[in-house]
Amino acid sequence: MSSREELVRERLLAELSTLRERHDALRAQVGKLQGQRGLPDDSPVRRGKKNNTPLGQADRDAIEAFFNSSEDDFTKEFNEGQGRLQRTELLDRLTMPSRGG
Image 1: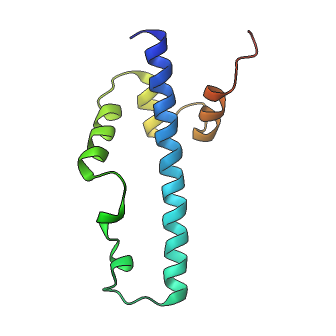
Image 2: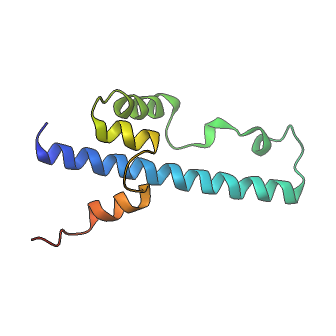
């Protein structure tokens, strides 16, 4: 894999991670709002209607498979949360210009 492909791959990993974090935060927010409103258990919002996501299940499965099938140490450590960088730090480092020139 060329260095350019590796950079793109790392940026995609970082973006996927950021999207996961945002999704989790939004889901938590919705959960709090649902609790305050007292929605019935059988409401579409309470049931977690799956048709309201922009990506279909096949798309999400393909993205997960792309990253999960990777054998390199970076992806393995990143997916397991064992890397030296936090997910938010990784995105910042990938998008900031390097200081060394």
